[in-house]
Image 1 (cartoon, protein in one colour):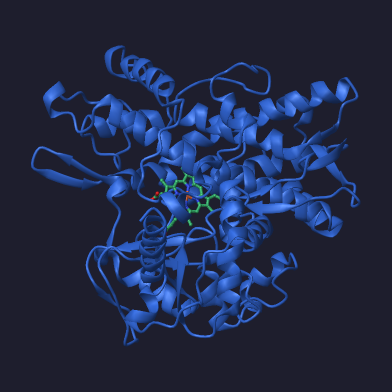
Image 2: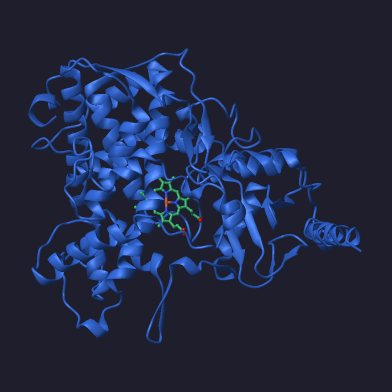
Amino acid sequence: MWLLLPILCYSVIYLYVRHIYSYWQRKGFPSEQAALSWDFLSQAYRREFRHVEAICEAYHEGKDRLLGIYCFFRPVLLVRNVDLARNILQQANGHFMDSKWDYVKGYKRFNLLEKLAPMFSTKRLMPMLINAQDVGNNMIQHLQEREERGELELDLQQLLRIYAVNIMGNLVYGLDANNFEQQDHILNIYANSPTRQGHLKSFTLRGVPQKSPLTYRLLDIIQHNVEQREERGIIRKDMLQLLVKLRNGNDLSSDKWQVEHAIEEDKLMSVKRLAQVAEDLLQSALDSLASTITLTLYEIAQQPLIVEKLQAEIKELHFKDGQLQFEQLEDMKYMDMCVKETLRKYPPVPLIERTCRKSYTLPNTKFTIGENKTLMVPLLAIQRDEKYFSEPLKYKPLRFLNEKLKQSEQCRSTFVGFGIGGAQCVAQNFGKMVIKVALIKLLLNYHLEWDENAPVEVSHLPAPIITSANGLKIKLKAREILSHSNYRKNSI
Ligand code: HEM
């Protein structure tokens, strides 16, 4: 009897696992041979399993346009064909659920992401460029102080995490904090421990709300600053101001920055919900911003010709009262190509997922995927596929020079980095702006010297991050700045 019980338990578990892992086969989809190995389980237990890399491997090994895979116990349909992926992401919005951004107030249901979109329009971003430059100037000032102490070999990845934290602290939390100097600031926790909460999330725990240990402290900051804006009428041209306007039901696409108050019952969002939106923005932004700047510098430090071309482009900029103008940033075509190439090789969101609200027939296929099942577009694998981008592991910004792209490639290149269709990154213009500010400040002031023998390992957790012990160790050498854009002395 006592022997029978474990055998029975083992058999039930075995049959249950086999049932899950035969899902795609039973539904008639091309699928991978699935098995739970001890090797996999022990790596998952030690949090060493690299799910992004494993999914890319499945992509490369597959042959059909679709491939059924299993993310732990979750059946996921991998879309291996770029045109099919584009079709799905562009055309089928109503089929997918994105409950995280759903918001209900009284009888009204909103999608908060749609409401946030006007926050990132050119008109709104222009004044925020001044704040972004202030953060960039703090970074250069910090480097100049290190320069005086003779400490110019540093981990650029760490520096740029602080830059990203400061940007979000300044613009989303309305703080003038300078974490380059103020080491004990609460937001510095994000700079010191990369937000690895994304790790395993899409693999095993999707849908489980994850509260950060800082949530309550961040709520306090928001509460205090919202009061300042609503009760004392303080105006600061940042995202928090726009979030407060949104909370009061104001139109975000108008030119006004002051808040038109609504009575408490009519407010669209509680302060708690607003703080949640701010934290979501912070978490969506940090890894993407820091990794894109860091990895651009990592790649260009190995190709001095690219650095020279970028510095030549920067030399053409004219600073008005020491400030860059928004239109000038948009005209930096070579820098655009470099950023795009970084996003191609190292997309901060390497896997795009969609969960079906109801059963959905995939365009131009005979396949129908069931309710609550997940589709996955492996952006990283697609963008490193030789079929779509020649010599995918080489860093070649000029592949995005329009004339050089064949028409089919042009189509595919629209995919790069920020996603595609109705749910693509809402903040992409903001992202490009702050990435460019950091690159301009650093390349205007410094030459990069990278020791090519230093080991650098990039892992996707899921955002790309340099996991080598010393991060990205780079020696900065101060540049002689040329006179007409001369700005090092005046405005850093
Ligand atoms: C290099 C910079 C960035 C890249 C490459 C990037 C890329 C992406 C991608 C690919 C998506 C998913 C699109 C989809 O599901 O189809 C996304 C979503 C999103 N991004 Fe970005 N992003 C960047 C920066 C930012 C920044 C700075 C913010 C905030 C200020 C931000 C806020 C968001 C938000 C709120 C979402 C929706 C997230 C969700 O639905 O969970 N992103 N981003």
